[in-house]
Structures are given as structure tokens and as C-alpha cells.
Length: 630
Image (cartoon, rainbow, N blue to C red):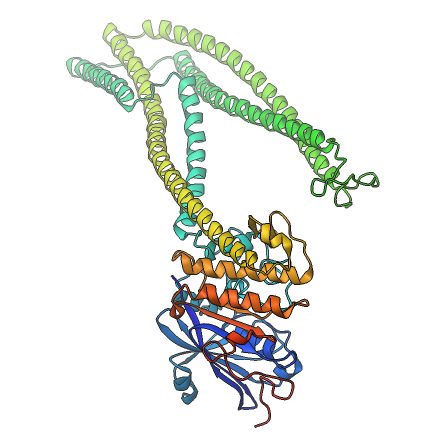
């Protein structure tokens, strides 16, 4: 529950006080004839607590400052703002009553800007701490400010009567929707934070999963065991064989001193040739292995491009299908639609821009087809290269075998039996060493594969848990939102059904809809009535939100409302009196210390024209709210 209350408002001009009135708990009525300055006080109240306002009347622009004492939950604060036709004016804040603030020249005052500076919070951010309202940023980086909140708290005369929220030049459907959720208590930072975490972790999970599946294909293509235990077993067997070969070689060296004469020039030449050809064979094997992996990657890439091309074609088909749907009657009033020019919308008559969308899809298809064609061409080149390499490898194998045989025949003619045994062991040792090196390379890939697998399991669990929390919070908030909107509807209908019969449609109405995206509202799907009835309907809905906040503690609406359009658009006096009485009667069902209602009227109901409800004098053109006479 959030409570916000104005205790006292002072307006100064050239250092002199021209308005000074206390406000009380519950209902506060500022009354007086038209042109006596009621709206000036309402605008000053809105501005003094942090609203954005520049459309001052000339009398107001003669003033210097607004000074207001407010009670926010259990804290007493005093705000001071310069009256100006410039936007985004800062606010001075004093912790304490207005009397203490006026006695203090500078001590205790702090200045906060309309916007956050590099080293200091804005006054919106600062006051949110007292209001216990979380700081909210949309995914587009938009922020909810005090001025945004006051758009649902202040009913002014300048905003459109069809607008749910007060007018603002630069807002978006997203910020309006976020504002509604925030004040209705259906926005929770925990849900927002979890949604951000979920998207980040899901992205990482998808990236790891893609790498994991690719590595799995590589291991399968090379017949590599996917367990570290299996690879270590093979590695240990070959290391054991290597150790045995080393022991046999050392035994031969120790048992017989082998002396070898220099090989002939031909033998050296053959040995050098054999070494060179084996190097070529090793390079060929490495290139083949790398090319095979590259081909697998290219095939996956082409497959993904084809999937995207298929999706683009499906998108284009659907766009063409829906664009050809005939519309002959208006879906709202069911009247037959008049003919329009070609390439114009039958409903709104605006030029159709769908061609640009089709062109974008066609361009994307062409780009995808080009990529596919180029990728397939490169894949053919790679496959051709692989065939050549495999052919070269076969030739190299044959050549190595031939040279080895030639080398062996020549060595056999120059070495002793013991020497030939040792050299055979050395050849075996070289073979085992190559196996060990290959297994160690594979072990690195398998360890990475297993690490990615473990990471996938861990991340999958985290993502699943986050999704569960998000679903639970969304369900809870959805239930809360339904309850909140149902309460707003009940209060609005109660006020409309007691309207007095001036608008017959109000008596039979049964459904109220609030649309923050479109900044509008509807009664039984209708939002067009006479101007005075639209004012009555808008006021009923805005007060219904206020009363719903009194009923439900989870609302963040501050239980505070200012209404300056009670008799706007030619409102009948008796009709205005009915609304005034209904508001006061409805407010009596709640503790008046828990809320504050402030409204202006030029035709106060006589039963309410008492000190319990009124603020200040009853103003007229000769006795205006701003007193410049003294």
C-alpha cells in the first residue's frame, strides 16, 4: 500500500505569498466561479509534486515558486520548484515540514534534476524510494518517471476526453502498458529480471548446443569414442606398448654393441627421399582431415540457408494470401465500404506500403539463393579437392611403400640380424608414437565434448527453472491483473449506473475496457458519446482506478487523485452534483486518513460546501485564488 498526501501548498510572487492553503485527509474541494483561478491551483499542485507543466496562464507566470508539503507513507517532505514556461525544471527537496523549510535558507535543501545526471539521481528516482515504487526501464530503455505516474493521477482540462492517460508528446504503447502494470501492481521486478536472465541463458544454451552437436558429428565422422574412459584405455594400452618397445631396444643396446658402417650414398639418398615422402603423406592426411570437417560445416550451412529460404517463401505466400482477402464491410459499424483508389487501404484509405514488405522478402530470397548457389559451388570445389587429395594420398602411399621396400632391401644387405630387429622396433615405436599423438588430440576434443555436455545439462536445468519461475509469476500476475481490472470495472459501473439517467446507455452498461496500448477506454466496446458524457465516463473510470487502489493493497497507485475537469464540456449542474455526491459517498467506505481526493468545481453541491470538504475561500473574479493585492 502506498499513501501520498498534500498537506499544504504555497505559491509566491516576488518573494510574497499569493496562495497559502492547508489540505486535509479525504476529500478536498477547491470551489469558485469560472475564471477565478481554480485550474491554476490544480496545475500548481500537479507541478509542485513533480509533474511536467508549462502552459501557465499569465497570472501564474507572475509567480516565482510553488512550495508544497507532502506526506509520503511515513515521511514528511517539502518540495520547491520554480514556475517557468521552460520544460524539465529541477526540484528542491527538504526533509521536514514546510514551516521548518521556510525557516531554513539553504541548510537541509538538496536540488535534484528532472533527469539523472552523471553523479546524481533525478527527483523521480529519489522519490520512488519513498513511494516504494521500483525503478522501471522497458526493453527499449524507456523509464517510468513521476510525471508518467501523475498522468493517471491528474485529470486536467487540456488532455483529450478520449484519452485514458493525460496527453504526452513522446510516449509509446510500451511505456503506457508498463505504467499501467506498475500502478495496478501487476509489474514485478523479479519477473522482469528473470525474463532477462532467461533470454541471456537461452541464447548461451543454444550456442553451446550448436557447438556440441557439431563436435558430435566430427567425432562420429572420425570413429572416435565419446567417453574419456574409452580413450584413456586406448591411450594407456599404447603407452604400455611404447614402454615395452623402449625396454626391448635398451636390452638390445645393452646386450650387444652395434656398430654400423656408414650407409652408402644410395642408402642416404633413399632414406632422405623416404623422409620427404612421409612428410608429404602426413601433410596430405592433415589436409584431408581438415577438408572433411570443412565439408561437414558447409553442408550444415547450406541446409540452414535452405530452411531460411523455405521460411521466406512461406512468409511471402501468407502475405499474398491475406492481402487478397476481400473486405467489403466495415468490421466496426458493418456499413458497406466505399470504393477507394488502387493500392489504398479499404478501411483507413491510406496508401498501402505492403509492396515494400514483399520487396524486402524477395530481396532476401534472392540473397539467400545467391548464398546457396555460391556455397554449393564452393562445396563442389571442396569435394573435388578432396577427391584429388585422396587420389594423391593413394599415390603417395604407393610411393612410400615402394621406397620403404627399396630401403629395406638395401638395409638388409648391410645390417646384421640384431640391427634389423632393433630398426624394426624403432619403426614400431614410431608407429605407436603417432597413434599416441592422434589419441591425445582426440582426447582434447572428447574432453571439450564432455564439458559442453555437462554445461548443457547444467544450463538446461537453469533455463528450465527460470522458465518455471517465469510461468508461475506470470500466472500470479495474470490472476492479479484480472482481479484489478474487475475491481476497476465494478467501481466504474457503480458510478455510471448512479449517473442520474442523463446518458441512458450508462444505465445498461455492463463492461468496461482499459486499453493502455491505444491510450483509450471503452464502455461495452463503445467510446463515442456526447462531450459531457465522455467527460463523465472518463472521470468515472479514473476515479474507479483510484478506488480500486483503496480496495487492493497490491496497487502501487498512490491513493491520491486531482480532478480539474468535473464540469468540462458543458456539464449540467445537477449531473455534476450527482457525480460529486457519489464520489464522496463512495470514499466514506474507506478510512479518510488512507487517501486524498482533490477536485475543483464551479458548481459545488450544497451538501458538500462545508469545512469538512472544502479548501480555502469560494473564489470569484473579484476574489481570485492568487492574491496579488497584499
